[in-house]
Every structure is written in C-alpha cells, then in structure tokens.
Image 1 (cartoon, helix red, strand yellow):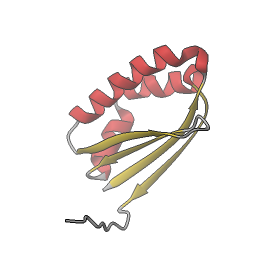
Image 2: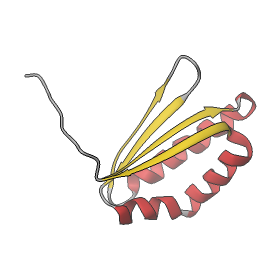
Image 3: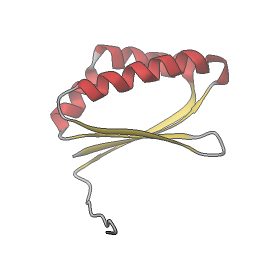
Image 4: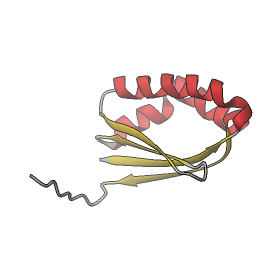
Length: 100
C-alpha cells in the first residue's frame, strides 16, 4: 500500500477553477488500476488534507505521471495553492478496530 498525504491551502481567487480540476482529478484517480481510496478533510484554519491510497508503487507512479495529473500539479503550483506539503508512505503499519 502507498499512502499519499497532501496538505494544502487554497488561494481564494482561483477556488472555483480549483474545484473543477479537483473533481476531474479524483474521478481519474478512482478509474486507475490499483486505486484504493481518496478522502479529503477540512480544518477550521483553512488547511485541507487529502489522503490517497494506491495498492502498490507501480499504481501510485502511474497516477503521479498521468498527463492530467501533471497538468493539475503545474496549475497547483502556479495558481491554486498558497502552500502545500506532500508525504508519501510506503507499506505503512496498519491495524484497526471496529466495534460490533
């Protein structure tokens, strides 16, 4: 499993266009072989945190290099984000509890 944690803050003047791109990118990611999950959370201070999981490194790399995703990355740096941080974790330790 490859987990990407993407923390970001948006520039408000491009928020509408950003959301259009974000929907498109999530749809593409979900359609790719090896996709596992994509969730985004919002903090009161304006920070956004997206967690994206792919089954393996090859699937993650295909997503990273996807032409549409590359264009979204360029636009993110140039206009959508005031700041961001990306952390990629391979084979994270995993355990869970679910009450019955």
